[in-house]
Amino acid sequence: MKLFLAFLALTAALPPTSAKSDRAAILTVIQHMEDAWNRGDFRGYMAGFEKPGVVFISGGKFQDGWQGTLDHYIRDYGGSPERRGRLHFYNMKIDLLAPDAAMLIGQYRLERGTRVTEGVNTRLFRKFKGKWLITMNHVSAYDVAPTSIAPEAH
Image (cartoon, rainbow, N blue to C red; front, top):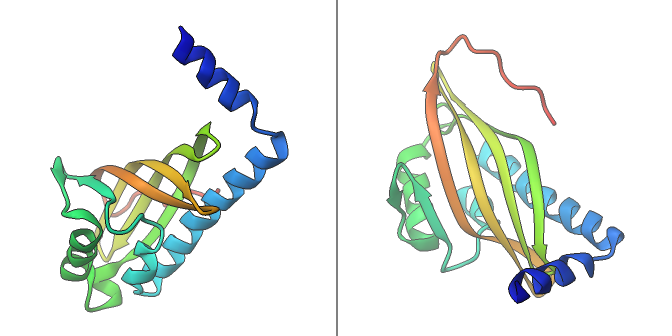
């Protein structure tokens, strides 16, 4: 009970303007990541993740931290715009857990030629020296039929 009350006190202590600016800052991180991916800048994409210790889980497996995740992206998606595809994040929901912690649950769509993958990201953000970074990223994905309609931008 004491832990719950302490949690309520922390979240209640967040001024509305601070909460609004924190949510905007987190969404800006996500937008920068999307933009970097779509121009083929995997290091720029990885700038949204805490280095070196991010915990990244995809396909039921742990990646090997920040560098292992970058290596995976370069190996599996690098080389050409067709191989990389076009990424879009949407339907973001952010819960501020504390002044320096937030959880984001959102969806994504990756179109690579006729292969279309959609999925859900669950991301734990922490604030380090005023900058929001992803410290834990869990991806659940599935392939969809190539004729599926792309989601609307949010």
